[in-house]
Length: 379
Image (cartoon, rainbow, N blue to C red; front, top):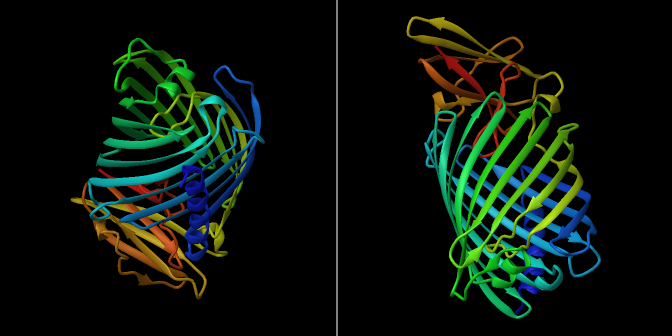
C-alpha cells in the first residue's frame, strides 16, 4: 500500500475523529501561497488546513491536516498529531511526542509519501528551559525508499512579550537525491550523509499581534559540501477570538526526516476558530481582577470575579496545584483570598469549565501547553 494512499486515509480518519470529539477548539485556515523550489518555476497554490486541540494543566493534544493544491505534481497533503504530558501542573519536566504523514509530489524529487515521528523531553526553569529531541522519518519517492534522522538540543527564554530560542541539530540521511536537488553536494559515496543546523528564533506577542522570525545556518559534515542560510518569518493579527489573519514568507531548507525539499514560500491565510474556550469577552457581564496586599512574609492575593447568575467560575494556580481553590461568595460574584510566599506565581480563572485564562488586569502569559495564566511576582 503506497504512502500516498495511507496519507489520504489518515487525513480522512483524523477529520472524522475530530468531528467525533467535543473539541475545546477547532481552527480552519484558508489562503493562497506562492512556492518556488530550487531551480524550478514559481507556482501559485491554494492552502486549506484544519487543527483540533485540547489541553488541561497536565495534558495537551493536537491533530492537524493540510492540503496544498498547485494543480500539478507540487500538490501536497499532510496530517500530524501530537501530545504533551507533565506529571503535575507545577512540574519542571514535560515530555512531548508526535507523528505525521506527508503525501507529496514536488517536481523531480516528488511523487511519494513520508511517515515520521518525534519525541521531545523538556525541562523548565524560571522564565525559560531546554529540550532534547529525537526524530525519525521514512520516505518513499518514485519507488525508492530512504531514511532520515535528527538529533536536536536547544534552549529558550521569555521576557517582556518576547520568547527567544536557539538550537543545534545533526541531520543524517541516505536520501542523496533530496540533498543534491537542494544544493547540498556529495563529495564521496557513503552509506549516509550528514549536515549540521544551527537555528535562532524570536517571537514577539503584543495583545492580538504575534510576530516570528527564524534563521537557520546549515553546514555540510560527513560526505557533504553545504553552506546554506535561510530566514523564515511570520506575523498574525487576531481580529477577534474567532478570526485571525496570518502572513508567512521566506525560505525552508530541505528536511530529510519529513522528506521535504528546499523551497521559498509566501502565503496569506485567514484562520477561523469554532467553539473557542470561554473567556470574559464571550460572557456578557463578566469581569475579573487580581490585587496583592503586602505582608511581612509574602503577600495576600485577592482575585475577584463578577459574573451573572448561571455562569460557573473556577480560580486556580500553582498555589493550589491547579485544582480549583475554595471561593467566597460576594454580592456580585466570587472572590479568592490566598497567602503567597515570595517568588513567581501563576493564577488563572475559567468560566463554565472552559480553558484557564488570566485575570483581566494581569499580563496574559502563555504556558507550555498553549494555555494562559496571569503572572504575579511577590517581592
